[in-house]
Amino acid sequence: MTTTAEAELAINGGRPVRSEPLPYSRQTIDDDDVRAVVAALRSEWLTTGPAVAEFERAFADATGAAHAVAVSSGTAALHAAVHALGIGLGDEVIVPAMTFAASANCVVYEGGTPVFADVDPETLLLDPATVHITPRTKAIIAVDYAGQPCDYDALRAFGLPVIADACHALGGSNRGAPVGSLAVLSAFSLHAVKHVTTGEGGVITTDDAELARRMRVFRNHGITRDHREREREGSWFYEMVELGFNYRITDFQCALGTSQLRKLPASVARRRSIAERYGRFFAGTRGMRPLRVRDGVTHAYHLYPVLLEGLDRAAVFRALRAEGIGCNVHYIPVHLHPFYRERFGTRPGLCPVAEAAYEKLITLPMFPAMSDRDADDVLEACAKVLAAYA
Image (cartoon, rainbow, N blue to C red; front, side):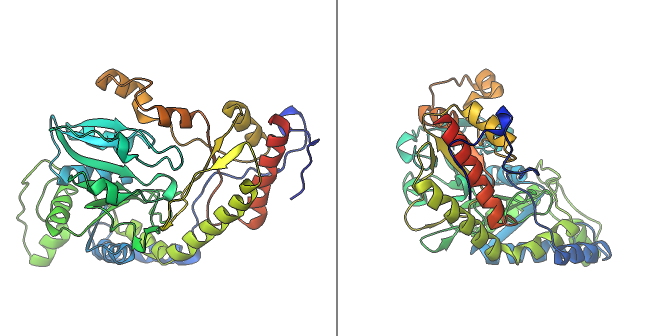
């Protein structure tokens, strides 16, 4: 990595670190994935077929859970989890402010009220000290922000069901227990930039057979038996027992997911290697600070956020982009979005730690197909920007 304090920023007319922009993340699809999808497309089943059940079994095994229920998106996974717990009108659910909107939206879908809690300033994970329980509080949604598992021991002490929004954390663990087995229900995303992708998709894991049954009915319009089950039984009869949604996932998506799942350990290992490379650089740098990793945690590194210290985030963002580094920001605190301010009366000052962190956050590129040269380009651009602005 070569950089000097005198290097002219690309935003000011200097030569950029990269001529081809590096995205903050992207999917990795290989020939095995393509063959798996083609085989599913040529099979007898395109949806509600055997590939769905195969993927669910493999996912449950990978996460140490008894059951896995595959659905059409990570948002659908969260919605199904909230529904399975019976959250309804007037019920409150604790949600951290630092997350994607879907973590709170899933509560609103069921008529409940998200109650926003603040985050720890060093990890940006839900801070148990900011959780306030009322007689209407029915559950806690904990977000494994960036890929690091929350402190589930502390959260379980409240005596309420805990849903893990583990959409960032597949392949991570806490004291040897895999993400997916740490909460009553764990929701995962299979979006293109996640550790395992089906294009769009989601999964919920649980050890509770009854919760799994409720979610399978919920994803299929509230109908007790899907088409494949009726075909196997030689029956046409079905009953709709509740108001559900069409949250089904296809067989060819699940074929892709099963193929991708085989590569999960290597994917997480590569992400951790990139994170270690970043960490060595930032250990001797002022102006950009990575988040703290909790003791006993295996971080899955879906994201690599850093907190800026004494720097203007908008200026740094523009400068890194001009250098060819596809940085991003994760996230605007949910309670600051217009919908929540207008519908639930949330306001600035409600979660001061999350709000202050948001103003300083930058997400650096992180995905397993990155080469060491790619990672060094990121660090060279960071050094160049820090030299100019610090």
